[in-house]
Length: 243
Image (tube, rainbow, N blue to C red):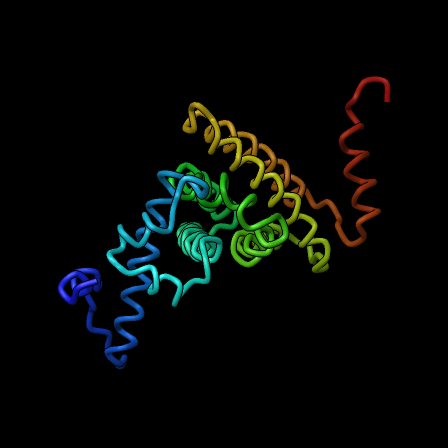
């Protein structure tokens, strides 16, 4: 490769305060690779994306790519992490901007439903993530971002009344909601009409939150899980004919 050709392949290097020229170049190269890979994976999927296409779009050499990532899976995981982190920050900002716990839960839900309709999130995280990363690695990534948000919101909602639930019970509530939201997100992302599917999910989750709020505000005791289970069952059946 000629010097002039190599020069054209060098990404522009921004000034980063406190960083050496080498560090600035390395950061610029990594950023160019992630941007190019993100676009390629979104448009073509994992199988349809080649590393040659990525380095060409990033205007770097393949050697530069292998300096930062040991292969296609590692590059995909870096993009996955970037997209997932951005989504988590977006949902957190929406939820943290509301003080009332019930409004906070709705704000977080709506932000989540917006996220799953984003083409990049839908393709990289929902459609490609589980198969490329493997189930365990995929769930590990989710645990570090999405689940932490659900745990915070659910903990806030459950703490809105007089309940003082032990940590295992709060986690149980959170895992149930997290599982429901993960499944709902997949259904919205794969729907022919994502907007309509999103409205259905918001309505269904809203009903569940309303029921939970009524329980919290009605004074139902929740010290022992078995006792709470029996009391809720009794209330559900008290107006049922034939019981």
